[in-house]
Amino acid sequence: MNHSPYAGLAPTLVPGASRPVVVGEYPYYRADPANWASNLRELRRLGVDVVSCYLPWRFHETGEGLRRSFDFTGKTDPQRDVVALLELAAQAGLGVLLKPGPFIHAEVQLGGLPDRLCEPPYTAYRGLDGSVLTSQGKPLPSLLDPEVRKETETWLRAVADEVVAEAAAPRGPVVALQLGNEGTAGDAHLPVDAQDASPAAREAFARWLTGRGLPDEASHVTEDVGQWSSAQRLLWSEWCGHAIVGMWDSMSALFPEGPARLANVPLAGLSAPGAALDAWAARQRAIQGSGHLIGHTEWVGNPARDTTAFGSHLTGILLGGTDVVEANWGFTWTDASFARPDTPVFNALLALLLGSSTVSVYTACATANWGSLVDMDPDGLRADGVDPALHAPPYSPGAPLAEGGTHQANAEGLRLLAAFLDRFGDLLLASTLDRDAVVLIDRALPEAGAWLRTGRTVLAELADVVQGQLADSGRLIGLGWLDGHPATAPDNGTVPVAVLRAGHSEGAKAADELAVPAGAPADGAVADFVASFTAGLPAPDGPRWTTAHRRARVLSRTGPGGVRFIGAFNPTDGDDRITGGDGAWTLDLPASSAAVAVTRDGALLGWLATPEAPSNSPVALTWGGGEADAQRVLAS
Image (cartoon, rainbow, N blue to C red; front, side, top):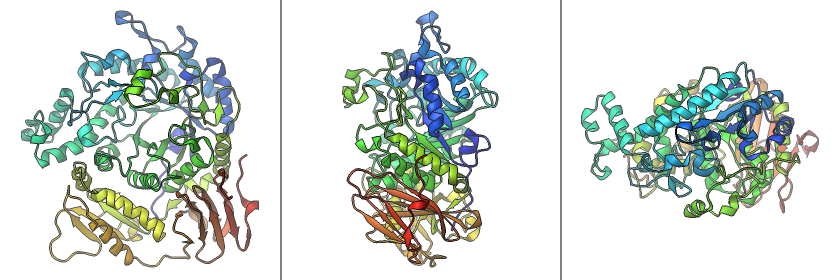
């Protein structure tokens, strides 16, 4: 019922790490340098292992024209002294994940790019559908434009030579470098027809086609997408991933050896428009084969309060196999609960149970000191439909630590997770996710589905079915790629396998295989197939839990020596009760709460739950007929 454990990012970020690693974002360019040292020391005490920092290009660039240069040592402004920041991080016992962009987003004006790059003569990032990728109402540049690329290389080489060279691991604290941001400029989950199709991008696509021995297809790249054949569209779906990976490769080559290379790819919403889930999946062929470490960002809603967002996390992490590198700890733009520890702890536990070897705290410190180069243009925000008041200091308001040194509400959640990981993290990292079956997906399905604009795609319907099985029957259906596993029996034959192929069914159907037309709506075929397949699954090996109201979802992980983690999550607005299959335990799980129990050979070793939310009854666990409060892990 399980598969081999994945070490993930943890041992890369912290060499020798035997437990999941906590990564906390520290936006130094929004903090008074006088507070840097104390903030970093306090983050370490709260349980942060590695700090992550974006480097805003526009903030570090000084002068104009031929006199343009970069300041990383504070000669023009103490807040630019990132070299000193890295020294302070090392003194605090922190590793550093450095994120130089060139586009960083991070709620910085134009994602940190200089104004000039978003103006003529630089080429805008324009999709096949004619849409322009914008930030604060201004067009973002195509990073494939040769002139933009030259400027980008100048910036990244400066970071490499003046910042990373002397601070790179293993001698220095910089253990990893992030390449780009959420793709190159937040584009790794865009619909395929919104991917960069500027003249330079089309030229690159043509070179890629020619290199694959497809000169005829290359000759059509300049045509309007409406004139493209279905085969040309499928090739574009695949190219979208290669375009992003190619940019990562060129960025990586500018930096010295030592720090690991990491790319972050956002999860895709199950109901996002433009078949964005399939577009995300289509890019996975190149992204997963890139050779870079891949993490994910979680900005797809709140899985503690929304079952669709829960499903996005479930599908994205199962299929992507990634660690979380950016999770909301304190931004209250759309949901005030992110400033309370119950929500970020719920989300962190979900990622950990699904296999993440990291906990991300973004941001770890609420900072309140920044200038006009960082501040976003209010009129530009309004042009994007955003209220400028949302971006007033501090950034972010609900972070665990305030810049002045006080602990905020989310500090309890961070201390709780740190205490849990200190006690059980080694067992968690050595465990494997229990799955009742696996569905392997033909990559041609999302590559074609990415162009579907009416109806549910095969992948979207499958994502709904996977969450439905978990909620209704307690079964976890794992997801994988058909070309990434033996078609017969992965996991040494211990897990039943079903296959979704692109094609047309002819004759008798195998019980474990379904052929579906690529690019056509699923129309219930996938749901019917999975329901039939799971109905024939063997009975579970041991006692299984039941839920009183089918609101909670339960995930489990098995470790060596009879260790088991049982994670229960209630992403609904109603309470639920979970009962162990042998009746030995019950868990009362209020709305939007989660709990994880650690057992060995059926005996409870310890457990933790999300801190109590306002108006909620407390999470309660009984084990062996008695309350388990004495074994509950509490914030240190």
